[in-house]
Length: 246
Image 1 (cartoon, rainbow, N blue to C red):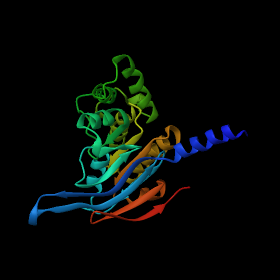
Image 2 (cartoon, rainbow, N blue to C red):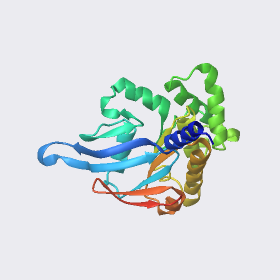
Image 3 (cartoon, rainbow, N blue to C red):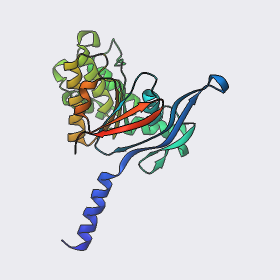
Image 4 (tube, helix red, strand yellow):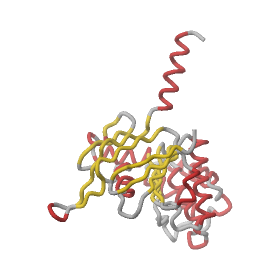
């Protein structure tokens, strides 16, 4: 192989390995004086492109706070967070909002679906909020619902679907605009173990098929073997890490 071609390959491999998200020594404090509470104390975490990461810890350990900071929904008191080569502390609120709409998908524990809209309409609404043109919305919504296996149920409303189907609708809404990063807060908490495993398998397929990076918070010990890495949060600090897959 010529040297130039080899250099291009090496640079391409390096780009694939580069982190999509880099949390550096982040501290988040709520309140002041004697009432202040440290939600995070110098948390550091790297999220590589195309990885599935679980944040594990007890209630109050800082998982949701860290996820909110990763999603540019909150800002640290100290430390920094980089999205690729972009320093989040230097981004305006408008820039953060645009980044969320275009590059990040958010999934909530409570599903957060509009009850009087069908699965298709819920996904379409997410695309409207993201600023996607009407000419593209139907195709993207149908593709996302097909990916999570909900084409036959796309015109059903949340109350007509199981908990697993509702969560898959929430995932479809989060991936329809083709984000690079998905952040999921306790996505299996409202589901039984079988349904929870199915949801993690959807995330696994997202990572393997589309190269999306997924960070989720969880208390569920049954899904730890299905992710690439587990980061343990305790008292606002990130402790041990287990590599599950190569």
